[in-house]
Amino acid sequence: MPETHHSKVIQFCPKCGSNDFPPDSERSFKCRNCGFHFFINSAAAVAALVFNAKGELLFTRRAIMPNKGKLDLPGGFIDPGESAEEALKRELKEELGVNVVSLEYFTSAPNEYVFSGYSIFTLDLAFIVVPESLEGLVAMDDISGFEFIRPSDVDFNDLPAFSMQYFVKEAGRRL
Ligand SMILES: [Zn+2]
Image (cartoon, rainbow, N blue to C red; front, side, top):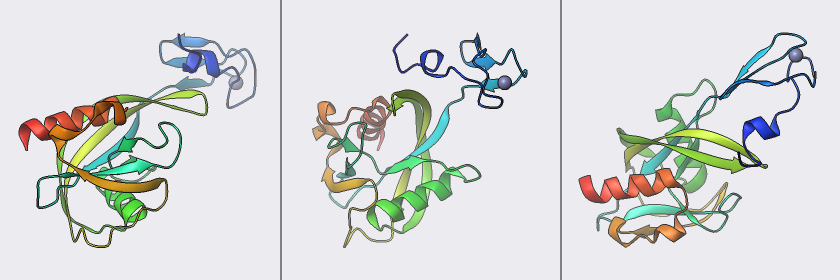
């Protein structure tokens, strides 16, 4: 198991603080002191496929770890209580100032995202997004820039997330 795996990182019960908190299965823990049962689930996240008139896809440059300086698709984690569509609209507005006219579900892929020395398992949902306009985009929030690249021209060494690589391949093949 990598050092970032939950079985290595999580040592105390989040409810009572006991250190008698062993794994109960591959993806759960059970506290021997208070009985609290804690499950590791996939966190849901969204990614936007936004094409310009030349058939190029909109990518962002990450301003934060992990993979700082590398390419990403616009998007991010879905907040508790939020729908995937709401999350996508919020992220596009926060990261690039883009207003969404319409969006359509495309496909999904799992990913593993290491943050603060801890593996977070995500389910990334990709949507095809029609923006109100691609004029006057601004890089904000957790991105440092953006660029348009044809799916077939993307260097996957510059796009580390497996799920994003899958979305770009599928977009190049199907769209
Ligand atoms: Zn406990």
